[in-house]
Length: 253
Image 1 (cartoon, helix red, strand yellow):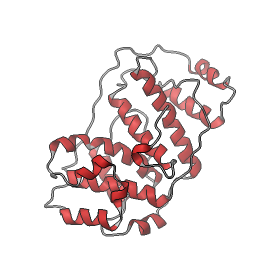
Image 2 (tube, rainbow, N blue to C red):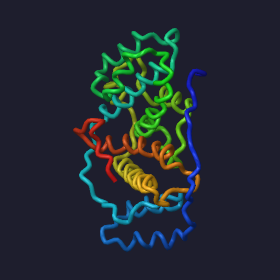
Image 3 (cartoon, rainbow, N blue to C red):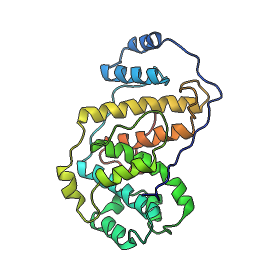
Image 4 (cartoon, helix red, strand yellow):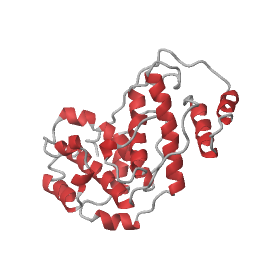
């Protein structure tokens, strides 16, 4: 679909981190009394990619997986707003998108600013330029339903990737999400917890870099690429925050 755009932005980090031995770095984390095997595996991934999370990060959290149908509805709520802005009305009517939202109760899974999109012009260029951040939210949610794992480079998704998610990893517009979710295969609870912990660590390294520390790879933009990590982490943590509204998700590091 040619109307999907590739949205990407990056800039060079003016203060690249000094090269250090990964094994020496890893030993610092192994010495932490509360360290877990899961966290140590994720720290190893981070260090290999050039990210340096703080050694003081806690490893135990009160997490509870929300119902699968809620995760499906959040993913499909994003689908609705992406279709609204990225697909011409002559190819997909307003009525069909709005009926999809209404029939599946997706209004409850849209943030306040997202609800406004469905009341806006489908040709709003400013909104189209911002919709790329929703792609990042969608990637983690689609991974839960079998799409490839969100990468950690900080590069934004392409329109082609989003198109693949919409076609193969979301509910068809004329079907009920409850029925789709009932048969959809998902990743294991263990894999979800580990992935969320990985992005928690990455997010911490990003936050430190935004404060001027050398905790991210060379050429990684703490703002642009860091925003990608933030959005992917948002979805992962939200999936493990049963009972919490999207905008109330605890994204502290």
